[in-house]
Amino acid sequence: MDIGVHTPPLADESLEGALAYLSEIGVDAIEPGVGGYPGDDHLVRREYLDDEDAQAELAELLETYGMRISALATHNNPLHPDDEQAAAADTELREAIRLADQLGVNTVTCFSGLPAGGPEDEVPNWITAPWPSEHADAHEYQWDVALEYWSDLAAHADEHGIDLAIEMHPNMLVYEPHGMARLREETNDRVGANFDPSHLYWQGITISDAIRYLGERDAIHHVHAKDTRVYEEQAREKGVLDTTAYDDESNRSWLFRSVGYGHDESHWKEIVSTLRMVGYDGALSIEHEDSLTSSREGLEKAVDLLERAVFREQPGDAYWAE
Image 1 (cartoon, helix red, strand yellow):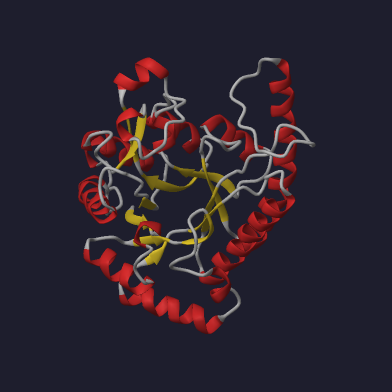
Image 2: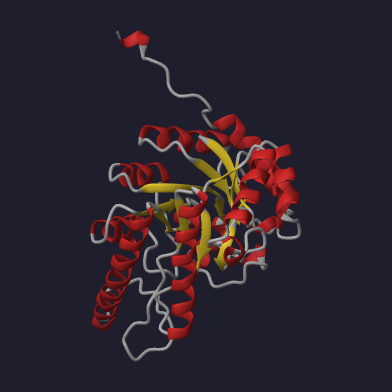
C-alpha cells in the first residue's frame, strides 16, 4: 500500500514541479486530472493520447522522481440531460480509458453521473426519497438511463483492461455502497469504487462496514484519503443536507478536512487495516479540499499521518497460529 496525491491542488506547479515536491515529502503515486472537474493541468489528455514520444517522456519523468500514476481522473456527468454536456463527459471518459491503457495505468476515477428525473427534464435531479411516488418513478427512470450507458462504457473499459473507479458522491446517482454494488452487478466487474470516505461520513455510514461490504464484492478499485468533520452544533439545528456555501465554514454542518482533522490517527489506521483485510493494496490518494488550511500544509500533514498508518510490507506468516 502506498501514499498518493490527487494533484489539482498543485495546479500552480508544472508536472515536474509537482513531482519534485511530492517526491520530497514522501509521496509514491499521483492521480492527475485528465478532464472534467479536476481539469488537466498536469496531464493534458489529448497531448499524450496516441503519442508514443510524449508517453515515453512522461514515463522517464515519473521514473526520475520515483513516482507512478495510480489512476487518471475525469470526474464529470456523462448522464447529464443536456446532450452536449453528456457527450463531452463521455468523450473524456472514453479517451481517458484509452490513454490509461496506453500508459499502463490500470484505473480511471470518475463519477456515476446523474440524469434528469424524466426524459423531458433539463436539470439533473438527485432523488433521496421514494415519496411522493413520482420520485420513485423518476429514480427508476434514472437507473434505466444509467444502466444502458454504463453497460456500454464498462464493455469499452473491459476491452482496454481498465477498471472504472466510481467515487460515491452525493448529487450523483451512485452515492453509497448499495448503489455502487448494484451498478457493478448489472454491468461488469470493471465497475467498482473509488472509495472516498469523506462523502460517507456525513451520511452516517460506518467506514469500516462500507469497506467490508464492497470488499466482499471485490469492488474497491481505488481509494481517496480525505476526511470530513461533522459540526454537531450546526447539524443539530439543520441536519447534514446542508446547502450553505463551502467557504462559509462556521455556518456549515460539515466540512471536508485534511486527513486527521475529522477523525484521529487510530481511525485512519483502522481504515488501512480493513482495506488490507479485504485485499486492497493500492494507493491511498490524498484529495485536499480543506478550506481551513493551505494545499501544501494540508497535504504534508496528511502524508505525515498516513506514513504512520500504511503497511509497506506484505503480511508475514502467522507463525504463532501454527
